[in-house]
Amino acid sequence: MIKGCGINVISPFLVYFFSVLKCPDYTAPKAQVMNETNDNSNKADKALLPAGMSDVLPPEAAFEATISEQLMTQFGAFGFDRVKPPLLEFEQNLLRGPGLAMSEQTFRLMDPVSQRMMGLRADMTPQVSRIASTRLTNAPRPLRLSYAGQILRIKGTQLRAERQFGQVGVELIGANTPLADTEIILLATGALTALGIMNMSVDLCLPTLVPALCDDMDLSGEDRIALRDALDRKDAADLASLADTIGQDNVTIFAKLLAATGPAEDALASLDSLNLEGSAKIECGALLSIVSAISEQAPELPLTLDLIENRGWEYHTGVTFTFFTRGGRGELGTGGRYITSEQEHATGLTLFMDTVLRAIPKRPTVTRLFMPANTPKDTSRKLRDVGWVTVHGLEETSDDKAEARRLNCTHIYEHGGASPLAHMK
Image (cartoon, rainbow, N blue to C red; front, side, top):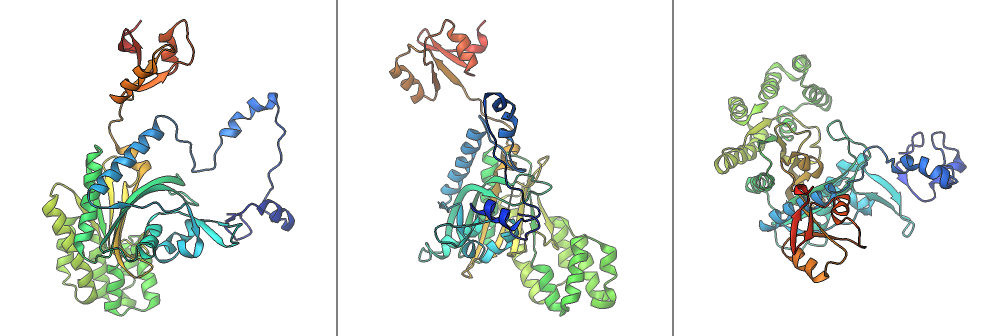
């Protein structure tokens, strides 16, 4: 964002453009003269990255790639076919349908070829939705698609300061049944459990319930705004103050919903006591079906309900879900029901790789086998065929063991086999 100019654009000609316009908050970068003296002193500056960005170094980069592929393998086993959308799309396509909710988080730039505005993806779900509605429009429904890739957002959050991170997810498009949502939830918990992540819970929300109640109560637009504000702040006092405008009976209903947040069994009991009718009852029907199916198929999985939460679910049209693990920072993933840009019913899930990686309790130990420079190449090949990571010395040294340690190897090839360096003096 170029502050003071009201736009959010990256383009090769911005340096010249803003220097001409003399935008008050923009300063063109100054050329630096590099020599041997100041090159070393500027190493820290060279490593400096924008806020929310980071270099992923060994062995974390390989670990993330491995875990991503394990998740994709799990999804593929359930019939979810992989797609690979581009990093950039034309803005008008990227921000259609569910993509509109990511508009304020999307970097934009001008395509020098077409002279059209493009967007750098801030979420992969809108892209998969577009693929389903265009490239795969004639594919049989329900359509099961999976994806993995990096996304970039303008700002981080309190729970996730990172602005660039990996997403791995699935979308089930063309099915309007609670069974589809149940499949996605159980698929996610099964895949995460296979990674060794334990003590998970799923928080279910129904962001369409409050609007449905407002419709049934025939509340005015002004009353809806005041009600939404009170509910978002979980403020029972502000909610009670609306009795004169929306009616005491209606306030009582919303107050009970506000208090019902918690374990699914207790929340559903409170919901049942309200005896809701009309469209609100229909909205609750899908939630009840999902909770019932999960409780039957995965009774050990803790479920919590928040019946009035709306923030972050603006484009969703039904039950939503968030995955947590005890003691973890941030959510493992989120998902829920939505409508594609071509008006197809869909549900999906996105896992956030930074949180997932932190939640995995055990990291694999990488064993690196140092091969002295004179070792036959065929010997190294045979060792790699049985799972060893081999590191070849490029020149003979007086102390192969010291060289092996210097190159962070755990073993050295000697006497026709691999010997652990830890046991050597």
